[in-house]
Length: 513
Image (cartoon, rainbow, N blue to C red):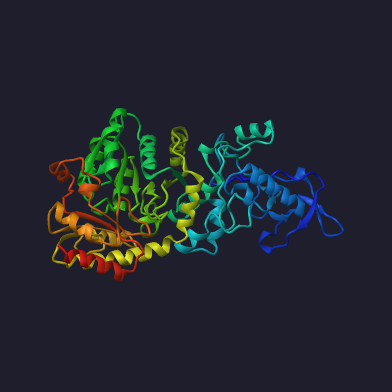
């Protein structure tokens, strides 16, 4: 998927002269885009260039008066950053004329431009998260290191013939804000690069991503398989909304492979949807095995990897067809933005994209900017959160006032060996049970000074919650226990605070019981 240059600057009038920027990284063959005069300036030929510039394009410096007028006009007509940050424009020969046309009404958004260019010098996830989609290949042309926010609800066409070219697949555009945004594309390219995916689609929240994906990929009257331990709102959607489309679901234990085989044999299953690790007990699913079983029966596999992050687990390389994330959590990482994404093949995402464009759960470009910003420290954050959570899990496991600890990094976890095989880190969330009742557990939480009592996880700030109260308070104790949610269960998301401070805080709170 290539990005279209949607933050376009009006072309200068014919015969406008401007100085040629000689930076080596922008050098390339532009023999048809104009000619040099004797005084080393270049004459612009408007008939020989295209706004669909590539990375080999020249960047030119406009005369000061033109640039000033452009900035003034941009400030008047654009909010926030957008075009007002475009301080240079790209003109090139139409190198894409020989490429296959883009499907009508679809934007050519493949990660080839943004990701292939960094592949030569970015081999680690950390470097990829920083540079992919931005270093050389973003569609927004600017000298700014950071990607501008393009706040627009629609994209214009210069003339009717260009609109017709777009409708017939010869010209790329986002057309309307619900169908895409240049800032959002950069975030999508980063996630695609980390997941090894052909395409990524960002939406307004993790729940938006999961519900749209389920409705798009499971036909009416179809059948799906999911697991017992999962995010409660996902379970409610599967149990209450999908049946309205006559979609049935078989629910199995995350490790019960025989139950999955039975469901695949008895039903025409369209999709197996699971979290790995799961919420809140951090159970792990053998992604390679379930993918093999499902594919043999023609079923797709979607893994919600929010707890794992793209750094700790590569679900697509293990055999899954789609990986889903609540980008609100680790990917954005600062507890300040909502977002969700799915990654996979362009073929699968095409049907999801079509439904998404109709339903309209569009990610705001300001949120996309925050996700881009957050991803640049993703590898550092996850590395520390992995280390802190593992040490705290071992500490809690040995404490007499903690009756049980759930963390895949512990040797007594039911899927520890599986997690060790398919994960490179175990995440920053630890669930555990206090030796006490509902109010004893609440007393422990209230005694903590560092973490916030809040939902969510994966951010820089530590967060703690008591699921029996935070997520399941509307159910009776008996009903909660059907889902394994005991009154003394605690879910602790470790942030980036000093380990010594967190350790002292938790031990002091435990001693107060």
